[in-house]
Amino acid sequence: MGWLSKIFKGPVNRVSRGHYNGNSHEGYSTQHTKSYGAHGNEDEDMDHAIALSLSEEDQRKGKTIDTGHHLDEDEQLARALQENTGHDLDEDEQLARALQESMNDGPPRQDIPIEDVHPESAPASSLPSNIFPSSGLRVCAGCKSPIGRGRFLSCMDSVWHPECFRCYACDRPISEYEFAVHENHAYHRPCYKECFHPKCDVCSSFIPTNKSGLIEYRAHPFWMQKYCPSHENDGTPRCCSCERMEPKDSQYITLDDGRRLCLECLHTAIMETNECQPLYIDIQEFYEGMNMKVEQQVPLLLVERQALNEAMEAEKSVHHLPETRGLCLSEEQIVRTILKRPIIGPGNRIIDMITGPYKLVRRCEVTAILILYGLPRLLTGSILAHEMMHAYLRLKGYRTLSPEVEEGICQVLAHLWLESEITSGSGTMATTSDASSSSSSTSSSSKKGAKTEFEKRLGEFFKHQIETDSSVAYGDGFRAGMRAVERYGLRSTLDHIKMTGSFPY
Image (tube, rainbow, N blue to C red; front, side, top):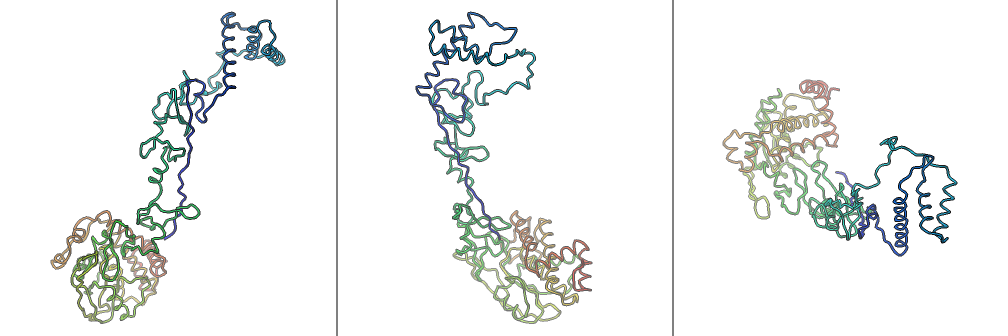
């Protein structure tokens, strides 16, 4: 289960504020606001005087076109200044003469008829999309109406009425100096954090950042349950079946051996021996459908963890998993099996567990199959399919195999059974009255009808566990066995194992 580290800092943007006084040429800036002091007023007055002078000149003389060359804008400006200043030589006249002399030094401009100007050679409009071309007024990017006189905001390459620049999450105006943007939508920074900062699926708090400013969290590789790294060491329980951590708003069931079981897995959990018999019949039929019928009647017993460990010691068998959840026995011994389904007592703890002794008698190479109680139906079935393959190999006279080959082919059968269950989409039908009477209403509903979406997902998880197992015997063995079965078929693979003790390549 690997670390996932992510920098989750919302983009910080700043608002530029301005005040609009109705002057049309101010409407061209959406990035900055302008302020005008005494100098600005003088320049504005000069511009107005020049424009008025040009207007009067045009009215007096009309618009004449020189066939040699046009007077450019600088020449018109110079003449206008000359004719409107009279006989007094002031600074404006000197400026006009200087402009006239600089104009005469340059080459004359050539007329270009309007009909010769191609559209593609004309410059694009300099008005932004949020400016009315006719009036030069700013347009609010929110309500699409002119800004008018008064305050406005300039941000995100647009201008806004202050009341129109709103948070995409809460729909309230953004009045702060800084805000966040996601997919071209603006957010209050607290709203952005609430929407996009990852929360722990266990404690529901925002996942904290480390010293480097990174948001670091753990995530289950299948369920992708995100949680704070601290929960791995603070005693937060995990479900013994699906491996998900217990959220703070939920309480897992505590089994008598200390294992914890989530409520979803509890829904189909098999708790006692009689309750498991319909599932055993299903798997026997599955083997028969694969032309691998087991004629001998091998007892199936559901047991507690202690009984399973004691039986493993008596059998002197070596398992390669960190936790043993199933055994195929070949020796005579007495095993304590669960006789009655326990109930859930105060504090969500299992109580009233009733067990009894069961004497195993050796009538063939296999004396019994033991399965750990309290696991959901699909996990119990996959363990049973695995142990049934151990029984099949012993009963059919296969030589002593290496752990990689024997455990590998057993995992292949468990995987094939899970695949058939997920594909079928229907649960087991209880076929015996004893099993029906001993099953609880919660678990029997799943076994008699279609699987829930969680049960299907749980089956995919158990398949994922088999496929990604990193151990040599169970993981590498499964992958080698699966390649052989996919290439040569199950029957040919088993024949090759029986003859050579290895997988075909």
